[in-house]
Image (tube, rainbow, N blue to C red; front, side, top):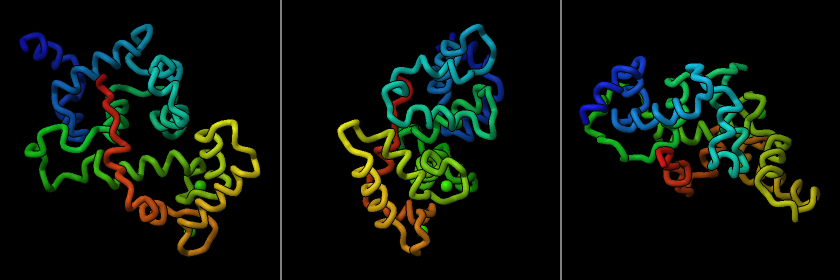
Length: 196
Ligand SMILES: [Ca+2]
Ligand SMILES: [Ca+2]
C-alpha cells in the first residue's frame, strides 16, 4: 500500500472528491489510473475522442448520450473530478463503507433519485425538464433494433409516453418518469462496475 499513498498526493482535490462521490481512496486511485490511461497526450483532461476507447460505451446504445453527460454546458474537456462525479452515479449502492457518510451531506450521487435524474437527462435532450414524444422516439430509435419499422417505433413511443403521462400534457416530467419506474430496480440497473 506504500505506493498508493505516494500516488494519492498526485490526485488534485482528493478529499473533496471522496466526500462528493463516495468512492473510497483505493477506488479513486484505480479510476485515476484509468483517467490517465484514457488521456492521450497527457492533456490533464479528457475530450470526446478519449472516450471512444471505452468498449462498454461503444457497445451501449446510449453510449453517445452517456459520453455527452460528461460534457455539460457545451464543455469540450472534463477533468478528473468531473469524470468521477459522472461515474459516481453508476457506483453500486453499498459498495463502499456507508459508515463514512455524514447525514448532513447532500444525497449521495448513487442514490436511486440521482440515478433516475441521470437517466432522465439522457432522454431530455433539450433540458426543458420534460421528455417529449419526439425525445422518447429518438431514444427508442437508438435502443431498438433495425427490425422495427418507423411506424411501430412511433406507436411504442406514443404508448410509453401515454402510460407515464399522468397530467396529460403529452410529455413525461421527471416525477412521472420516476413514478413509471417505481417498480424497476433502478439501483441495480444503473450500477456499472466501472472499475473493471
Ligand atoms: Ca425535453
Ligand atoms: Ca406529463
